[in-house]
Amino acid sequence: MIKKGPSKRNNQNQSRQPSLKNKNGDLLKLDKSWRAVTGNHAISELISTRIKAVCKIVVRKGWESSREISEFMSKLKRLPLPIEEFPEAVLDRICSSHQGLVLYAKVAPEFSLKEIAGKKKAIILVLDGLEDPHNLGAILRTSWLTGVSGIIIPNDRAVALTATVHKVACGGGEHVPVLQVQSFVGILEDLKKEGFWVFGLSDKAKVNLFSVTIPDKIVWCIGAEDKGMRITTERICDELVSIPQISLGASYNASVAAGMTLGETIRQHVHHSK
Image (cartoon, rainbow, N blue to C red; front, side, top):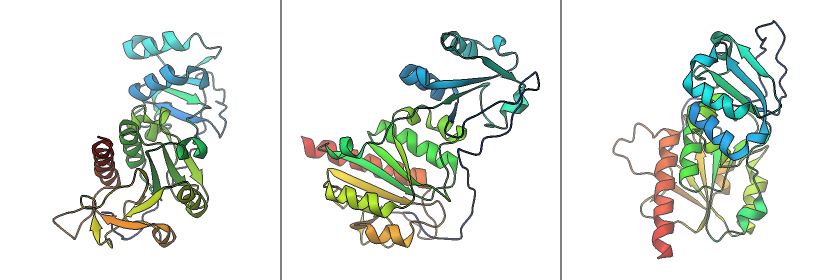
């Protein structure tokens, strides 16, 4: 379960792109709507699913000596884009573990409420104020592997789709739509009208994850790493659910809680379909 506690602010907005200059001293021009994708697994998935969405190639100087980067570049060279080379220290400003290559993309999986609502079984996650990019990235990866139809996050006071998020997601960002909204209330009400039940993870719950029957169309609300769900999110939930634990003085990491919850959800969905 996710417990409440003191707040720690670590806002990371994808629109806050670093100011970079290439090897000739020219400023790298970036659009605020682009997303930075780095990490070998994430880049491989981007190239295989939507290579035409790549709009900027940023690579470390001397990349020719790297077999992995050279393999990527052989595929990227077919694009009508210049290769922007930078010293490794400059790429560190985009993502500390960039592996020598960063791709900027302008197209991401689209969150379609109509398409999701038409499914007989569907899982949606609402992440209420997660601030750690590693948590969001890990949840994206797990969501991809467990068939989550979409993730909803707030516009502010939460991490967005940064380069670090994409790297940790290992390609999940190319498969799971992420929708940013100003308020969860409206879209959750819309989802309820489409037959979804809204469950929230909370230490206030009277039922636990392994005793509750999970509906075929489910929205799971997961609170921030240190303070849990906001009151407004909690109030719109149809059911509050806890994850059993031995010590009540601690709480699960948000991505671990999401993994356990999604695992039990697909277990029940598969079992009920037999």
